[in-house]
Length: 548
Image (cartoon, rainbow, N blue to C red):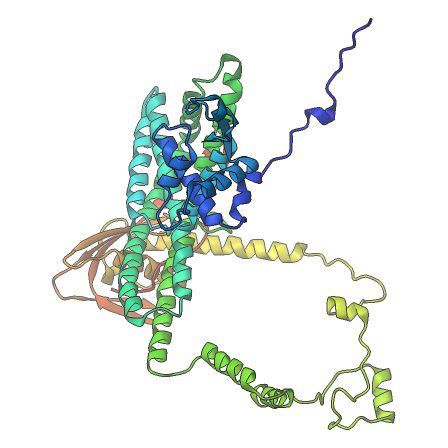
């Protein structure tokens, strides 16, 4: 007899298809009761209770959904066993006589598949119920951790543990900030879209929400540029790469000996991605605005949208009609019409749709209509049909015949665009150099500004005034892209400043101002390891256009 050793085929080595039957109870009748039963098992697991009897489940169910007897619970448990959520084992603990072996008694416990399904459903419910928030405190924490990284990187031999902890806290706070900001803006849009809300409740909520948005916008203006500058300092001095490698080595320290190298490489790629996401969130690049600036613009745009909803609510309260109310009234009229003829008359009166009198046709159709004219009073149902090309019906345009069009050469246009972009970047750089004061000076001594420099000055001044609070005499703000910093100090001598421009004179109370061009001190760049990509400083400053 010869023995043969069979090798597993490629089919046998393929992973088994995923089994989603543990989610079947969500679409079954009494789905809410099934969820309650599974929740009883989860609570019992937290109490380190592994097995439950049907009477235990029946007793732990909420009184509002509890069946009349335990036999109904047994049927629910058996279906959950069939779907793979639970496992049933014979209950021998209560067997006291031979006839008890013939009675159907089981104890039940969660399976791995059932526990995983409940964990997924818990995450689903948590995400749906989450409103999110704008975490101004997270911005302060990010600034603190970036400064800590600068101190750690300045050491001759940076401590791997300190670098790992600082990077972990930094990325965790950033992830919370980004996730909560996305959730909050989504819930804010749903709030703005509400129209069937109580007017008084919405007005009170609106006031608190606008104050909340304004406070976060002010913190984002103040701290966003500071964070961008700290990121630029770390990347410009090529300190990010060594810190990321230290964190990756620290994370892979507990891997198996043969897996250390691969685990460290995977951890390094993960940390590089985290840092890149952080930098892109706060630092703008040429042709791409940072997420912080987009969030700031979205939050600013939400305020007038909220005010528009308030205006609509006030109009409704005053008895004025709107389009949605008109359509609902029209729908009732259609439903109350006695017959189709009345509905057609109502349609024509409402929308003014009558027989077609003007139609563009081709030469053959025009010749036929000339030979056999069709009166304008002819109903559509009795008029001669108009033949439509299937291509026109399917795509909305005729199929073009003949030679294909030549491919246009865009080289000259791209060259002109590149020249325009370079000229604009040069103008912005010159405007920054023109605005840099080199120390504290009065607004009245700025002299005449060209339009681009004056526009940048107004936005920078608006960033400073956005952080002004009652009782303050001095404020410091950084532009949204972190390229300029302004220090504004109020004067109590009652003097007036005038800034002349080709379009007119800008006047207001005189202040002491110190404008610093940060790009002259720090050359922003993206560097991780040996790769460096320049970023930032490609466009004019942004901010509210306000005057002192």
